[in-house]
Length: 191
Image (cartoon, rainbow, N blue to C red):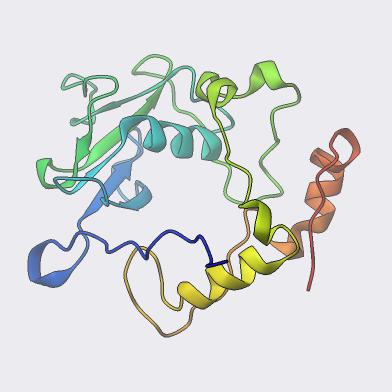
């Protein structure tokens, strides 16, 4: 039976063959205020609003429920909730709660605390469906097929310096054990 692995994704290339980047900034710092640089891989060189919201929410202590974006540091030019964030339209500023709240940033795994209950997860996660691997490949063959197919970075197409990615780095086993390991059936798999 042939392997059922989706074809390799070709990223959209912007100016001079580069992937456009959306820069997300902290509104309360004049200098050194870059929070994230997100590759704008969606159609039109955009980043999905909700994806950016979740990413920013994680690094700002799970603030996705109260977070929002604006195109100005004073928050006056608010981005429409749910509308794609187009990189060519300029940088965005991430706000938590009201415009005056000067939020902290979780700069490492050690600083971030995972949500303690399912109710604390982003609401979009409750309807998220994850397809199981194809039945014929459940004995470890699927990951080998994916690694064979993905010989370069999915976002940039660069071949050098690629390695298998992990949602939680294997070196963060202690963080995992203290935050999630005791309340979950999931575990970090090391090689």
